[in-house]
Length: 129
Ligand code: THU
Image (cartoon, rainbow, N blue to C red; front, side):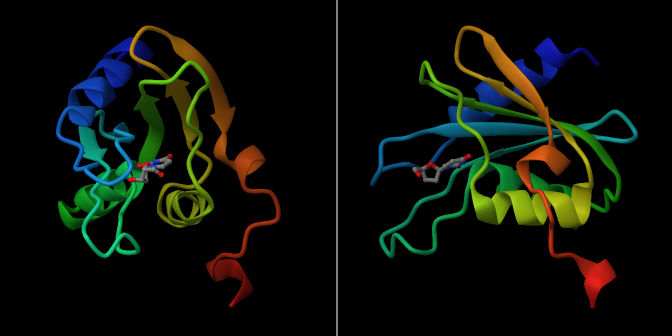
């Protein structure tokens, strides 16, 4: 699968975002080691604090479906500046996805790619327990 297909899947997932409070819709598409795509969107709710970001929705869906190894994730928002994953998502993506390629895009273009290890230096993870 190409990066543009992964980004296209994230853009489609974004349409399902539940962002009634912030108005900020995000889509994510996670590629499994087997080449499947699992998507997610942000899910806000009236508590505000129980919001879950698009990236964690995608990862939790994938884990719940039995996927265990991942290669890349695309994250899309409708902004000129790219939307990098928040700290909580970096932690979860690292624990379950390892050093993913993180592709950031908006509705029109691919804005950049990062390695997750660079976004989460000195991580806390199971090796330290
Ligand atoms: N959000 C994501 O879904 N992913 C990100 O990478 C950044 C933020 C969501 C959380 C919340 O619903 C809205 O965007 C505004 O923070």
